[in-house]
Length: 415
Ligand SMILES: *[C@@H]1O[C@H](CO)[C@@H](O)[C@H](O)[C@H]1NC(C)=O
Ligand SMILES: *[C@@H]1O[C@H](CO)[C@@H](O)[C@H](O)[C@H]1NC(C)=O
Ligand SMILES: *[C@@H]1O[C@H](CO)[C@@H](O)[C@H](O)[C@H]1NC(C)=O
Ligand SMILES: *[C@@H]1O[C@H](CO)[C@@H](O)[C@H](O)[C@H]1NC(C)=O
Ligand SMILES: *[C@@H]1O[C@H](CO)[C@@H](O)[C@H](O)[C@H]1NC(C)=O
Ligand SMILES: *[C@@H]1O[C@H](CO)[C@@H](O)[C@H](O)[C@H]1NC(C)=O
Ligand SMILES: *[C@@H]1O[C@H](CO)[C@@H](O)[C@H](O)[C@H]1NC(C)=O
Ligand SMILES: *[C@@H]1O[C@H](CO)[C@@H](O)[C@H](O)[C@H]1NC(C)=O
Ligand SMILES: *[C@@H]1O[C@H](CO)[C@@H](O)[C@H](O)[C@H]1NC(C)=O
Ligand SMILES: *[C@@H]1O[C@H](CO)[C@@H](O)[C@H](O)[C@H]1NC(C)=O
Ligand SMILES: *[C@@H]1O[C@H](CO)[C@@H](O)[C@H](O)[C@H]1NC(C)=O
Ligand SMILES: *[C@@H]1O[C@H](CO)[C@@H](O)[C@H](O)[C@H]1NC(C)=O
Image (cartoon, rainbow, N blue to C red; front, side):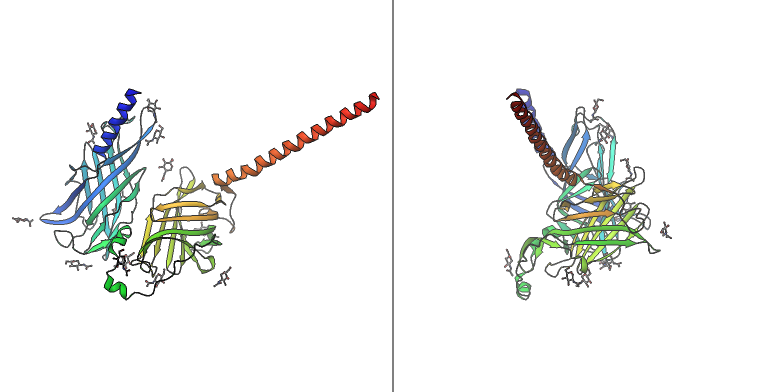
C-alpha cells in the first residue's frame, strides 16, 4: 500500500515535470535567410510494450529542443523543406512542407522515439529507435502568411499521436520573420469573429435549424474507366460539425443530413486504394479506403470534409488520413445496420446508418457476402436470447402439463 502510494506520487510528479507544455521556437536557415520558423508547444502520446503490459506515456517537447541542422533543409527542386527538431537521446519530430504556389501545408509529420531512454519509457521491452510517419494532417495556410492555431490539435502519427498547441508557423518565408498576416485555423476562429463594423452589414440572423431525423439511405457507386462499377456503398450519412456561425456569432455544433437525391457520387478505384467523393451543393465528403494486400484486409483509412457554407467565415476543412474504420476482408462487403460514429477530428465526426460498403472487387454491380460489425452481432444476440428463453418457458410448461396429465391418469386408474 505504502509503496504504491509513493509510486503514484512519484508518477504524478514525473508527469507534472515531463508533461508540462512548453513553447519552443525553431528556425531553419539557409545562409542568412530563414525559410521555416515555428513557435509551438507539442506533446506526444506513445504506447509501447513493457515487461508486464503495454504502457502509454505522455511526453512534452522540452525547452531544450533544438533544430537538427544536418537533417533540416529549406528544400530544393527535388526535396521538400523539412524542419527536424531533436530532443533527449535520439527523439525527434519532423515537419515536411509542400506548396502549390498559392497555399503551403504540412505534407507529413515524422516522430522518432528511442525506447532505450528508460527515463521516458520505463521497463520497455525493446531498445529500438522507432520512426512513425503521418500523411497530410490538414495544417495549411496561404503562402506569405503565418499559420496560427492556439487551440490544441491532435494528429495520429503511426500508432502514436502528437498534440500541438499555441502554434504559429510559416514555411517558404518571404522575410526572416513570421509574416504579420495570419491564416487562422478553424478551431481558433471564434476568437477572431468579424469586427463589429463588418458584422453590422451581415444578413439577418437565421433561426437555428431543428435537429434532423435519421438521414435517408442512399446508394452510391463509382465506375471504372471502362464503365464497370468498382465501388458500392449504401448508407445514411449525418455530419456532426462544430464551426463558427456568422449568423449566431458563436461556435455552434450542428447535425447535417446528406440527402441522397441531391448528392452526386464520384471517385476512383485503384489496386490498393479506392475513393468515394460525395458532393451535395457546398459540401464535399471524401472517403478513402485502403487495401493491405499482405493481409487482404481493407479499411476506411481517410475521411475529408470540405464545405464552403455561407454561414461560416471561411471554408470548413477537416481531414484525417490515419483512420481505421469499417474493417473487412477483400472479396467481402462491410455491413453495419446500427448507428456508428466515426470520429475524424474533434470538430467533425460522421454518423452512419444502415451502412453497407464494398470498395474493392465488386462484381456484377452487387455486394458480396457481408461481414457484419460487432454492434449488429450484439443486437442479433438479443432476439436469440429472448427466443431461447421463450423456448425454455414453453418446454417447462409442456413438461409440467405432461406430468400433470400422467398424474391425473394415474389417479383415475386407482379409483
Ligand atoms: C550573412 O551576414 C553576415 C553579416 O551580416 C555577412 O558577413 C555574410 O556575408 C552573410 N552571408 C550570406 C551567405 O549572405
Ligand atoms: C507489442 O508486442 C506485440 C507482440 O510481441 C506486437 O505485436 C506489438 O506490435 C507490440 N506493440 C508495440 C506498441 O510495440
Ligand atoms: C515483454 O517481455 C517480457 C519478457 O521477455 C514478456 O514476458 C512480456 O510478455 C513482454 N510484453 C509484451 C507486451 O510483449
Ligand atoms: C537511445 O538511447 C540510448 C540510452 O539513452 C543511447 O545510448 C542511444 O545512443 C540512443 N540512440 C540514439 C539513436 O540516439
Ligand atoms: C492550390 O491548391 C488549392 C486547394 O487545393 C487550390 O484552390 C489552388 O487553386 C491551388 N493553386 C494553384 C496555383 O494550383
Ligand atoms: C513527406 O512529404 C514530402 C513532401 O510531399 C515528401 O517529399 C516526402 O517523401 C514525404 N515523406 C514520407 C516519408 O512520406
Ligand atoms: C510572397 O512574397 C514574396 C516577397 O514579398 C513575393 O515575391 C511573392 O510574389 C509573394 N507570393 C505570393 C503568392 O503572394
Ligand atoms: C459577437 O460576439 C462578440 C463577443 O461575444 C461581441 O463582442 C460582438 O459584438 C458580437 N457581434 C455581433 C454582431 O453581435
Ligand atoms: C475494366 O477495367 C479494369 C481495370 O481498370 C479491369 O480489371 C476489368 O477487367 C475491366 N473490365 C472489363 C469488363 O473490361
Ligand atoms: C428527393 O426525395 C424526396 C423524398 O424522397 C422528394 O420529396 C424530393 O422531391 C426529391 N427531390 C428531388 C430533387 O428529386
Ligand atoms: C461552394 O462549393 C460548391 C461546390 O462544393 C461550388 O459549386 C460553389 O461555387 C462554391 N461556392 C463558393 C462561393 O465558392
Ligand atoms: C499490412 O498488415 C500487416 C500486418 O498487420 C502490416 O505489418 C503491414 O505493415 C501492413 N501493410 C500496409 C501497406 O499497411
